[in-house]
Length: 339
Ligand code: TYM
Image 1: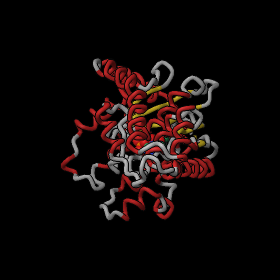
Image 2 (image 1 turned 45 degrees about the vertical axis):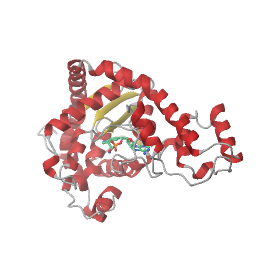
Image 3 (image 1 turned 135 degrees about the horizontal axis):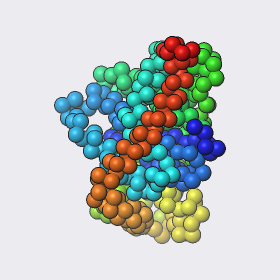
Image 4 (image 1 turned 120 degrees about the horizontal axis):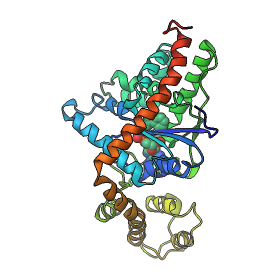
């Protein structure tokens, strides 16, 4: 049902704990935009299942771990300020219609087309025994995005191709069966499109280069101190653009405008700051940013039943909306008698 507001859809996979790359790249936008948009935000537990047999030894996988990670992520969403009165917050598996729609999309998608997807190609390069779920991942994601009628999808750069696939899929379905799905637009904020990790590569749960969104002060300090730097001494001028520590300072700089950030930049250029001091300032900034989030999280985590009830209610709402759209889709593709 259209409320007059545009529809925003996004999700995070409950694999590993969220890091500041997830936050700045996508989760923050969900919070910032919750008043302006009709938001469907979910925990992508069906997508998480693709890692059962994609390189992770299957014996390490346990259903209990996934359901705990799902609950943890729901707590994380609430702790950063998502308001369940404003957004529909749910776990993906409470809308099984996405799996049904993904099947229908599978039948209008060719294998060569999906073979070009980055995640699948990466998986093949790593010579993993790629499971069909990994191959089909973008199609399930298309269903996540198109079923609630997304106008806009806030994500990091690594998801850009997935949104393009969702757009292609919408276009193809609409061409074959008539106008059904809205064309979604990615929302990728330039300054945080690829948040770097402690090694300078994209921050990623799979690269062991993350700073946890709810990390303790000690964990933050440890992660920051291991950032590699060159061997320039305190007084030597330094190139801030090449410094991995400086790249992370930018996240806490109000888009490069804060006075202390500009001061730091000047000290890099002139000389007069050592990497140790720069790291200590950074660790302090990150910890000061995390502290209130962590406190809020602890409060929410003390009542898991409350969170489960919220998710159940969100799931019912999302299910109802999904069912309404699926009725239209089933009719169009010929899965019902009342044409
Ligand atoms: P996931 O769980 O890998 O990541 C969640 C969000 O965080 C963004 N992100 C980053 N942004 C900037 N810099 C980084 N270093 C960084 N690392 C991660 C991701 O781009 C993402 O937006 N496939 C999705 C989950 C998903 C989804 C969807 C998202 C499933 N269905 C429908 C949007 C719409 C994923 O694995 O995200």
